[in-house]
Length: 169
Image (cartoon, rainbow, N blue to C red):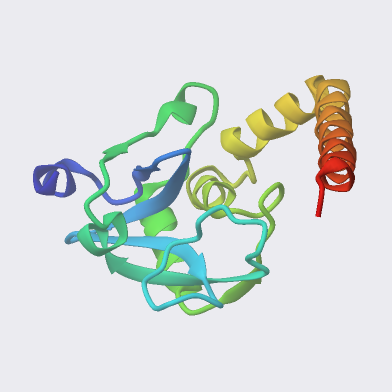
């Protein structure tokens, strides 16, 4: 993975695979990235796309430190339908924002939104769009599932209670 940092160009988007989600950063050269990290978490702790994060801070850190052993790659796939800013503008804007605290929102202002904003000037997150689409498509299913779980819990409690009443003391 260290060789990727050598092949990445300043202004490239870096996608870091964190299990069920991806963390995003912008490569600024010499092994460093600029990214959003939790303003409330431990130093160097990347935004975990958690609904619990309310504030994020822009940091410049070594890619190896941010990746924490996770796989990563250059992903400028939006270049096919978006015109990226110049590498100089991307890096200058990223460097200028280091240290700024911003509101964090999983659906409207996450690490992927931030990285895409730096490269393309647009707030986009495919991860957030996918979650929204799943939630919209499955709203009845989710409601049905919640209802089934609650009904199951109620039945379990009723059966458990009636068994306790039947057992001799």
